[in-house]
Amino acid sequence: MPNVTAEHLIEIAKGLLIAAGASEEEAAVVARYNIGANLVGHDSHGIILIPTYIDRIKAGHIVPQAPWTITQETPTTTVIDGNWGFGYAVTDRAMRYTIEKAKKQNVAAATVFRQSHIGRLASYPLVAAGDGMIAMITADSGRSPKHVAPFGGAKARLGTNPLCVAIPSNLDGPLVFDMATSAAAAGKINVATARGDQVPNGWLIDAEGKPSNDPSVLKAGGALLPLGGTEGYKGTGLAVIVEILSGLLTGLGFGVEPTGRHNDGCFIAVFNVAAFRDLGVFKQEVTEFAQYLKATPPAQGFTEVYYPGEIEFKKEQDRRKNGVPVEESTWNKIKELAAGYGLTGKLGL
Image (tube, rainbow, N blue to C red; front, side, top):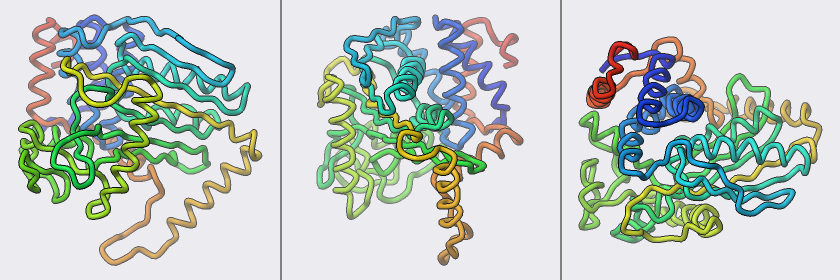
């Protein structure tokens, strides 16, 4: 398994996307956020996805250099049509637009529809946290194929339906909570398949509704389970709310349409902390709260208590220093793509 610097991976991703039709600007956004997922240890949302995105461009499911259109707007709300553009670029712009509204109106929200996969959710609220804002985002895959069975069900009816909240603080690493409402993200199943690994108990059921540790069952009619194990109704409840915010409020709808086109819908909300508390005082109190949690004596089997986002922060420090491991199957696909575009030498492959 090769170990590659993040900077090299960004250049590879950017170069391949430009060759596939992306503008330099949108390729840079996609590459930065995509490899950012690798840096924090979420390899399911990293370089492994670049070949998929290029396949979707070729199929017409992602439209490079698509327009970014506001279809409805008030001083505090925005409805954005991504026109099937790169989800990373569409949502990055939507978050920054919403931040600017929150600076003026203190609270702002947006919905986004008709865009491709947006990757790791934390990327976007972290932009707002850096501007002294609390931000949240929820995402749903619209009417593209589903992967998660509702609690008690044997067939997939829901997406992994993630949600994320980021909070400003003075901590060394960002305080950010980013989770799928399923037992695991579908991308983690893809990583396990690529690496030839089994998955933990409680992640999957096969096509007959029986528990399985074999990641291949997901593409053979199986399903992911909702977050919560024996209390999976909690994960299902969260997934339903996310789907309503990101699928119904955006107008994408629910269920599955025959085209199979991936269609991320998002709900974004941004809150200006200064409208509620002095920002400096708030950030220090959040810091002290996180430190209070970390001071908890570890339970048996644990060595440390982490605040939300701390594990990813430490992983990023390690990978910036030591490189990002990339599974052989993904690396081979990347090299094949580069060769096909005549970029092997230029991209250092």
